Image (cartoon, rainbow, N blue to C red):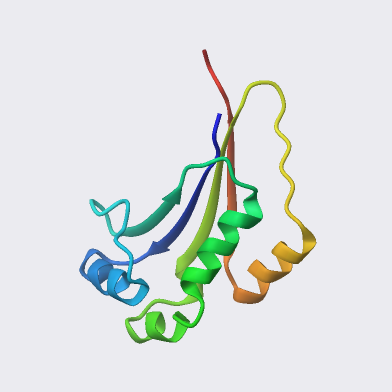
Length: 113
């Protein structure tokens, strides 16, 4: 099973194109007013989190200019498990996310065969 990591920015539908321009990346989910970039690979959480934080680095002011704050940004980890659910995130990564004001959301569910 693979984890899925998502960077999400809640925005109105009319701002979706502006977010894509600021981040220079198309949303994986263009049908809604939620800009989203997903990574569906076997990565360590810190690798995905770092990819997301690298994408955002230096762009918070530009996002604020279009009316979006750090409170509009969240990072999600979706984890499907068979028998046990264990997640580990380093203290350094938690400090890094917290210092940027980014919310971390984790959703776990049991795999059904």
